[in-house]
Length: 145
Image 1: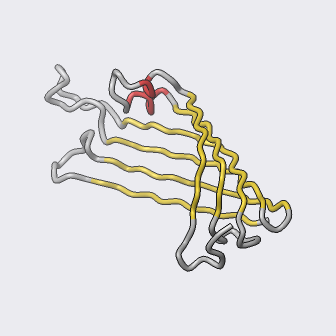
Image 2 (image 1 turned 120 degrees about the vertical axis):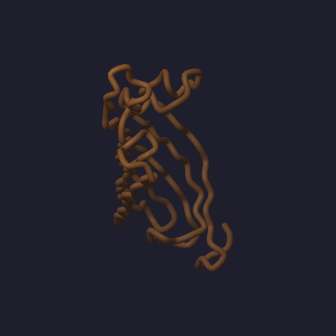
């Protein structure tokens, strides 16, 4: 059993005096516990929370009253299951690794507004992803299956 945890927070500001839509604060937290079944197979669960905050929704020049509105905050939760096999044995960082991925993302109404009007992601607050993945490192403990 092992757990990996990662996160970041970053902030962008332009040279204007007040906050505007281009001023962004964003962050992500992800946790991935991994369970092993024997020496070459395992499964990871993954949980992610992402959030973005924009300075203001409406610029004073765009608002008839000249008053900015904001801040604009959007978020998304994602959960997933990742079964995998590896010829290198147990360990969170053993490679090569072949995996199947299934993730489901839950966007709030504000997050959907960040997509263009004609984008399908804007219409759905739940999104499913199924994929296949392979990862290896040139200096990994095993180079093939």
